Image (cartoon, rainbow, N blue to C red; front, side, top):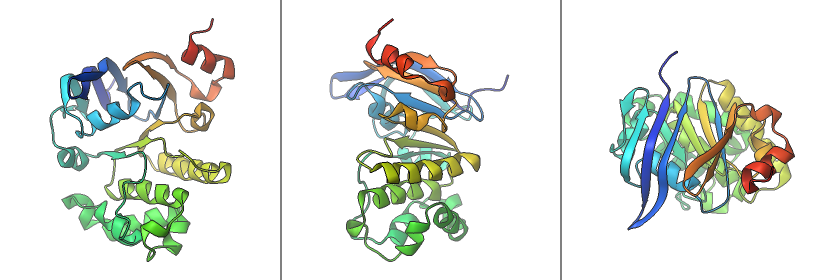
Length: 239
């Protein structure tokens, strides 16, 4: 069996003196796409921020493609192909769609290929092609989320981390975004996705992990077979 693409072992981190992650451990194999579910405020976003170097790890390790990246800088982690598309609006609002996307390819390798990559982004998100010259402050929430994911793709990710990509979106936009993520997965980019709607993850992921109180509490190996009763059991512990 080949080594995991991402291997997280006994990872602890938090803010100030307040711990959030408590010895969290999991791994992701080649060609796996993982969904994370769980209550709000229990460590999912902190996990992503720690994996991407935005929050320092207190202890434990993160290995990506066989290399220890636990204490690498965020830019160095992006260079290695582990890219985090964060929750919420983190764009430059007065920059255009095109300018924000260019900034997603700031490291050397992706920067050299950005003309080709941006056309791929526009093929996944045709709406962004139509709005390429529009300032991001004038976009809808769904369009800003498309730009956020597009910026991640501009970095040529080997693994793309998506933190609640459908937060606050209408059912129509959620369906549109799911189709776009399916296209990204089909292109060979592995994904890790946090979602409050587990049904959204069914066709996108091969395995679900329940994160609660800063640890992985349970997993479902076949997310395509997810049933409502199993979700209830994972969230609330019902037999």
